[in-house]
Length: 463
Image (tube, one colour):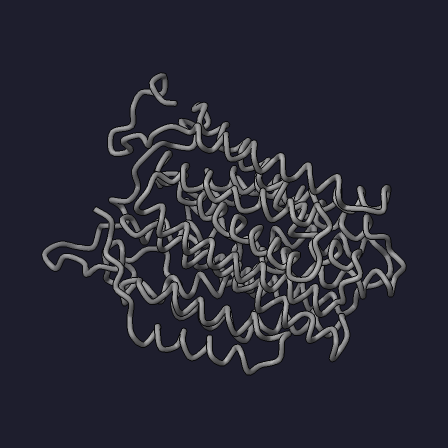
């Protein structure tokens, strides 16, 4: 039976207050304030004792490696390339280099988290990632200096990634897992709204070098204390059972161990549906990354101002939050592959608008529709792993999916920039991405019914 949704009044009040305040702040900050309102809204229906862990993951992801790569790197592209005379293609290659490192390391990193937990690695990564960002204050015109920093970041910042944080949520929740994934992983969308506004503001006021320092300081001053206070690998560390419920008083707390069901990593790799899922998400990530990570250059090429482009990217970040939370709640109640396939209709329309040359309000609508899918689908990845393969080797399996996702999303921006450098237009490549969204939807819809993970079927009988 699906869990009931009961909204905490104080969180609803905070959401209403932030939503009202958004209309009285400068346009550049409006999306950031709206992100606070949405964050309060998605936290409101969670059980009281589970909100802390979800909030910690939300903040960690908002300021972590994914948010910076998705939303800050493209905003820095204009001022950095102008100062050093780099081409768009040369700059975009930095994400490809980071992608290669991530693809090669994700499975091993996931296995490390499965064996030793996440908390200690998250704390170390927050500090090292912040220092790496701050070091870019001293960036030189040598492209290899730039590439070297972003090649190192996927390793030292792995504890700030969704591989780490989603494992925590998988261990904390069961019946409310979709809802919790949706709320926690919405942190990347919150990062989209807040990081976009903050980055553009800092670049405008103090220049791009000091802006990198500001982003690093944000992690040290805000994220690190919250993670130290609230992040725990399993609910038994807080004397709780799964889903934030009170632990039985007659026995020791053992619910987290009870959550370790399903297939081992080697058993999972022998299943056809694993490879079908991986292929679907690689194609989907390529389409999403090709547009989302190059959204600002795509809009700037059409004559849209830097502030308007940052605001449009901020709107995409808001839709990430909504898409993630909405999809999570739906997956607790409906068959997740069908939910995912239906949501992919949004980017087919949204990227179709951008491919047709949309600007202004139409471009913002296209970005919002893309964000709904981008938010929902990463949530879907995390959720489907637990329902098809279980939690026994969750981080290792997620590492495979994350490597595939990163391979697609990290290489696509290079091809988007290459297409523009060669043709002077983004139109043709955007239509290719529309086709990939449709193909991904069909593949996800064919994953089949969930197995009984309490009694895994023989591999020959699995789909």
